[in-house]
Length: 254
Image: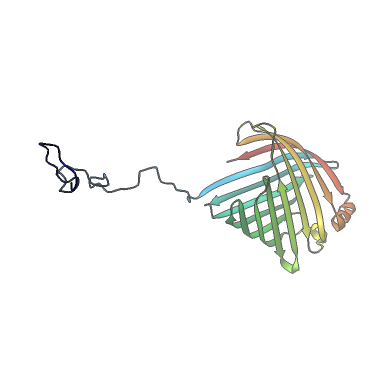
């Protein structure tokens, strides 16, 4: 090296350079073996998945009648797009009084939020009604689950439904679930005993114990308040305007 003396008897050669030995490893340590995916290690984060949740399957005891009711939803798809189906209804006095079935294309638009576009079919007493449906659903701040859905039907009928629920964990298994629902209609529908404006407000409290995450019996209380013309129809039919129901049922999901 220039400017540096060498020790006696030592020959200085170049510090780098020259050809590698014949048995040297390749620079990326692959030794000529091509890279490939490791079996079972793919992320598969966009694979279709599904779930069925029977949130409420219960018997109720009201002031004037006893009966059964249900509320369930299921979905199948990936993180961005899903087929979303939900249904709820009530049976009393040995017949189906009211129920509906909804099916949506559910499209994710933000973290925890999605839009829904589809249809709804009403069943029960009175003529069946078919609606086009659109709305949003998601997880609001402080972990409130929120749904807001609008409906457009034949003969200029319109409707809307707002729902919110929350889960309060006393322990990892004992959970109190408050739930509120408001239904609104654009015009009177005497055949189905529904009035225009705010039709009814429902509020429920259900305390469940999760024997397993997928299976939880519960007890609770549910209040239904009919309003305006819907309340007038209820009086004509000798139905309660304000009904308090004691409920007991089971929550299941797959």
